Length: 232
Image (cartoon, rainbow, N blue to C red):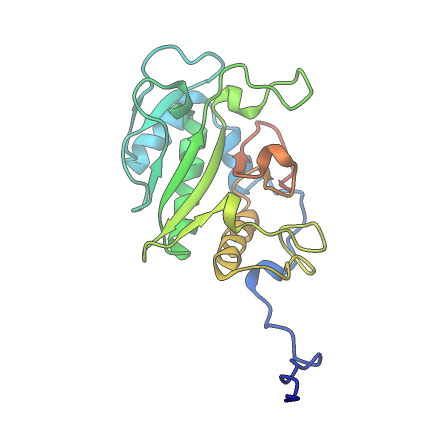
């Protein structure tokens, strides 16, 4: 018996309403007052004084940390957000004082997005180099964090490798950045990342859009004397 075809979805359906991540980003040139500029250029003494003024949970890093100006370890939550980094004497859990201040200010952004914990793959990587170059990575100075996932207050986990989707523009933020297959978790992840980009907290934010080596994490770093904020 012949049957009627199922009704087809209209090709004239309106597009979904824009999300915050689709708004244009500000200019890449950071003002001297931007958090990344202010924090990256602190002296060791000024940085330690600021850690104490904020009463942040930290201790001096155990053992040597070559290349790190002021090596410390995070020992508790920042503004209620737990950063789950390698523990013990692993060098990958050491970070420079300036990056710790940046993570403290990052936590303020994370709280707005209901994040309660962050899984950090590594911070300090001794002798780390930029891919294919001899130039040191900011990881070698303890000024970079590789983040794998964020956990929200309802237990939802935003996993970079699983939830990231690249839009047709190739950019993580701004017009044309919405991918057709983007999930609810993917939207939440992009809204978070683009909010961080707008905060001016870091000089370089590398995403899975950057290359295959970053398919499973987000790279955030600070660089003394830099004036640009780059999201790729």
